[in-house]
View 1: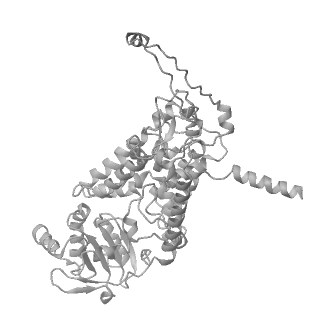
View 2 (view 1 turned 90 degrees about the vertical axis):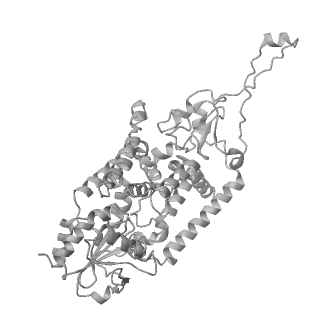
View 3 (view 1 turned 90 degrees about the horizontal axis):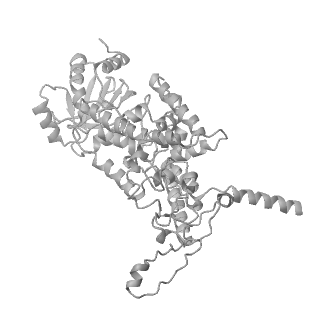
Length: 524
């Protein structure tokens, strides 16, 4: 009996010693919440509901089958691709709001990608410690932010092309969360070209490097962390230190695995691991009077410096005040007892835990059992039927009524730079194949009058069948979202039976259109 009791006691002790930290629990909650559409992983399809337009604070690929929101970095690039015609107030506003509230606390607590890298770092391998060279290399992410996230998308937007350079050429998250999960369905395999080979190789480099270097991608390549780093000093939440109390012992810098120069700077992810190692309790959470319980060790009273000459002039007798003795905590003792002294107030901890559990449970139930938004129509499926109103003849056109004739649906709007670029190619293509297919151009944002005025005033040479839904400005955009929500232009190619044979989400040229003509069997 004693052996059994001892066994369970040992098991309980092991569980207590290896219990996840609060930060790890929050990271797991957030990862599940970001990807609450679990059935997307089962069906290998992308969720296209209304919440997909909302920016998430952390890194999570739009193309992940479980994603219920959009990655702020991908949304920023997508919006900058139209920078020649409109300013991306919504996306920039969301990122600034996240930064002002949390700063890089998002990196430490609310980013699934950071959590995955920390798991990789737990693999038993030789570890490459930080140094002045790693600190210099940490500025690479600011170069990537300036070049791949901002400059390239804006430059190409002015020539009518949409290139989200970081997502397309560097980001390993899209390859891992998007491509690899979607490839579980053979129908999504497609042609594995050189770009996929490059992205997959880059993903392997990031994974292997994360086993040897703490948060390899976050520290050296993540542009989102670079953006949030600008807000670290003024963010409402995060860690900070008191320079008056600080003794500059350096224990916090030794403990931290990031390339910080001091606690709370632009490289700090506010993980909180530095708090328990501070011997004078100079490091604390911002807003600790609200969220944190009183500290176990109070801040010592600094020694008072007496100005004897000044007191003599006032005929006062100097009184020597002995400084409060603060026992210095040895690093060995800290290593044996690494529990933080700043603890969440019990009421707040319970409240936050219950709230997160309820929100996560509700999201999982909703997106997997009650959400009826279409998962997205893929190549090989029959396109949903729809009736569109003609702009020029004031008639109607229904997809199912024209079975027997191939159809190309092009979704555009007046101020779309990519749409303007591809419009002449569609005109030439229509002139060549008129009678062999239906080319339906669907304005998806402007009113019927705006669409008609634009074509008559700026594109009088266009003589194809141009259409728009009179009874709802959002109808065409809603129909286009059945295929993708990556922005405009969108081109959907249907064969004579209404089966989808191709979906294009960027401006296309005559070469691409000729390829589809061959697939439809009408090439000349």
